[in-house]
Image (tube, rainbow, N blue to C red):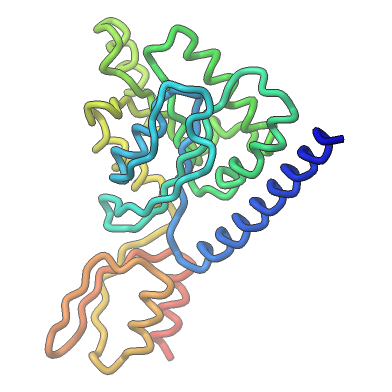
Length: 261
C-alpha cells in the first residue's frame, strides 16, 4: 500500500509538472523567439555543449540521467535573432515504458521545439546504435522521421577524441550534408561557429530582414515591430528612427498592409 501511494504521489507530481510547463510554453509563444532543443544519448555531451553555447553552468557528469529537468537559456544568434535553448534528459536503449511516461514531462519541450539538435558522441564505439535508440525514443513521444526533415541538425560531438582517419570520413559526410550535420568539440569549442551559423540559417527560413525608417512620432508602429519581430539594430536619428528587423513572412505582409493605411 505504501508503494502504491508513493506511485500515486509521483504521478500527481508528473501531471503538475506537465501543467506548469504547458503554461510556460504558452507564455513563450507570446514572445517571437524560436526554441532549440538538445537531445541525445546519455553522456553524449549535451550539457557541456549547452554550457558552451549559452554560458550556463548546467551540471555535466559522466552519469546516467545527470540531467533530468530541462534547463532553458536565451542566446543571440549570428543573425542577431534571439533564440531559447533547452537541455534535456539523456536517452538510453530499451527505455522501460514506465520511464517513458515519466520522461514525457521532460521531453514535451522537444515536441514544441522549432529545431532539434541531436548531439552524438562520435568517439563512442556504438555511436550508430545510440543514434537509432534516440530516434526510437523520439518516435515514441510522437516525433517520427525527424532525421529526414529540416527540423533537426545532427551534431557530431567529441571530435577531439577521434583519430585522423575517422575525422576524414566525417569530413566527407559533412560535404554532402548541406549543414544538416556539423562536427564539433563542446570541450574545446571547435566547430561551434559553424554550428551557430547552421542554426541561424535553419531558423531564418521563412523570415526576411528589413531595413525600416520610421518617423519619431510613429510610436505605435515601433511598438508593433518590437512585439512581432526581432529588432537587430536601431539608430535614433533626428529625422527618423532606423531599424533592422527580422520578421516572419506573414508578419512582413501585415507590416506592409499597416504602412499602406
